[in-house]
Image (cartoon, rainbow, N blue to C red; front, side, top):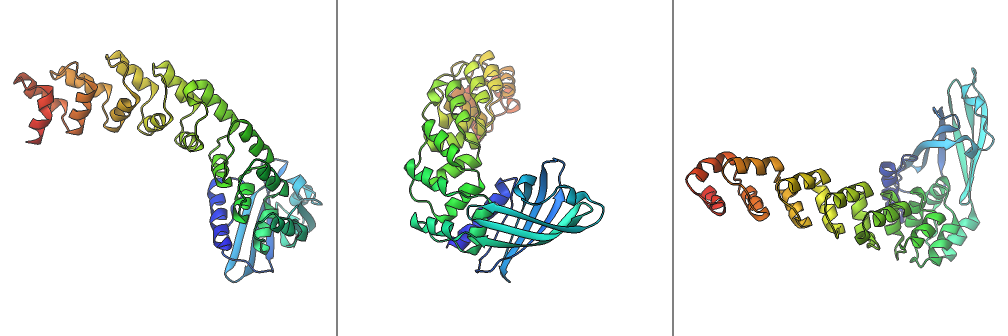
Amino acid sequence: MIRSALASILALAALSGPAATAQTASAADGLNIVFTLEPRQQPDQVQLELTYSSGPRSKGQSSGPRAWSDLSGLDPAALTRSAEGPVRFRIAAEAGTLDCAGTAGRGAGAGSCRFDADEAFAEAMTRRGLERPDAAEQFALALHGARLSLLETLDRHGYSQPSTDDFLAATIHDVDESYVAEMAQAGYDFDSLQTLIAFRIHDVDPDYVRAMAAADPSLKKLSGQRLLAMRIHDVDPDYVRGMVEAGLRDLDADDLVAMRIHDVTPELVRELTALGYRNLSQSQLTAFGVHNVTPAYIRAMAEAGYPNLTASQLITLKVHGVDPDFARDLAAAGVTADSLPHVRRR
């Protein structure tokens, strides 16, 4: 269970995190690790790729930028020298230490590594109720800089005991002690670490929480689920302020998400107001977006002989496929707007 979940989490990191991509299927006690180095445009960074395996069916890879300072003992000039020469470096973390040796020069480097797992780190995890990590899991924890202080912070803020997989996922997605504390100060403590990980993946941070509350008072103290949905669907403070300036009041988080999904913009609200459609509810505006009731459609229906249609009539006409060309001749014959859908169905 742990190993399959680890594969899923590391695959998610490959999709969600720019700094690392990784996946693994299973792990044994021994890890075979090789590295490559390449220069990056940023002078303080190097591209480090690690490929590791612990058997014919257990392979993984992690690739991303690293600060030169993370690779203790490696001179940046070694990568760009004109002739290849030996290099050694070490990456130290709470969960263990990676010692690497190889050659570098002419813009590249390669070699092999040995990972020494920190036994005290694994024992501390088990004392806190987590499942003991195997070699591949502890290597991943070390690679992404997992710290035991995160577990202490989570416990202090009332989170339930995370799994080893969740601990790793939190580390991969930069859920650190300060993020936990800052979100708690903003009013967001959760029972499950997975919710906080989702917040971090989708960039829900204290600044976003404060900015949304400042954009409209009705968006204070939202549930975590609603806050996350708004962030996922790009309901940002600018969008909220635009809606308020367009005349909407008492904004509802669910309606904001629905309006955003269906392209109801502040510009659309202002155009509808100019056409006489003031004080439309948020659900009516969403229905306009869903059924493509546009200002152009309203004007065309008025020109076809059906001015001053209500919001409900416009939605009904659109639902039944009544277009201005169809309506024009019927208007001349005296057919009412409410009768147009019935005629259309014949």
